[in-house]
Amino acid sequence: MTALAALIAGELPDGRGRFGQFGGRFIPETLVPAINRLEAGAKEALADAEWRAGLDAELASWVGRPTPLTHAPSLSRAWGADVWLKREDLAHTGAHKINNALGQALLAKRMGATRIIAETGAGQHGVASAAACARVGLPCIVYMGAVDVERQAPNVRRMKLLGATVVPVTTGDQTLRAAIDEALRDWVSDPMGTFYLLGSAVGPHPYPWLVRELQSVLGREARSQMLRDAGKLPDVAVACVGGGSNAIGLFHPFVGDADVKLLGVEAGGHGTGLGEHSATVAYGSPGVLHGCKSLLIQDDDGQVIETHSISAGLDYPGVGPEHALLAETGRAEYIAVTDDEALDALQECCRLEGILPALESSHAFAGARKYAAEHPGETILIGCSGRGDKDLGILMNAIDFGEGA
Image (cartoon, rainbow, N blue to C red; front, side):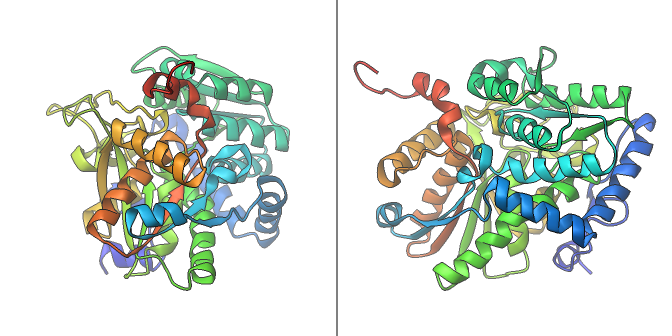
């Protein structure tokens, strides 16, 4: 059986946590008992009908699921396509991150954790983790790169209002990669009492699997909603990709639908050279980062390189191992769009649809627009992974709002 067939059959990750050659566990010995305990606890919880029913009830009454599927008539006319948006921007806390954060927080409570730690880039996972921890009654510490603390100040304030302690990370590249490094150091110091609420589909097994399972709710909803509202499945599902949690959540329920193309859109930054972008699948090569083998942006000596994106949530030099497999097998295509293209798509969506998408989501809109130009008349599903209120500080410096702005 090929790796793709095994994925479609539900047999990946395998017993070693591998998606083909990608995934696995590359962790210090001190974390092995905690990781084994997490895997056992997660499998037990996800197989427990009563626990799943409790999660579903919280997703409905507290998160606001199912999120809407919105037809975009003006974008459809402008692009010559039939455009639909999966509105994760309307979920509680403003992005898809809450699906995973709530599930893991409930799991931490079930497993008897005394504190929760998390990392964040754009701040949405930090906000979601802070909210989820408040909901379940556990203290929350969020590690955030100092660069991201500055460019995502509104989300830092939101985390603090929700009761979280925000720890700026001043080492390394001071962005998401450094925040994950610091969270892992914390976890090593107390691997049994601390629960690491990892926000993306990266890291050592079982995290890529666990995050996928918790985020796939958005793809399952979108698939059902497309059949109900559009009368068919989309020709293509499009999502932005950094670490890849929203994209794998959207893509995974469609992997077995051979007629549905999958298009991941990465951050092309302002160039193709090392340090100018965050397009891991487009320009990366296999390596190990944060406990997992996947595709990485690295130099010829295997040193992971600092990345760039106007979007804090996409500014990461790796990608989830399931995305690496989807790219390797050709089941999904991954393209890069520049900062300027994402900004232009953001303004177009605001002007034509009255929706302000997050800068992360704006990359998906820009990629979908490119796809529409090459495939006129097709039905396009875009994962609108978050809302752009958090990005107003960046947008004030990047966009000419006119005199008096």
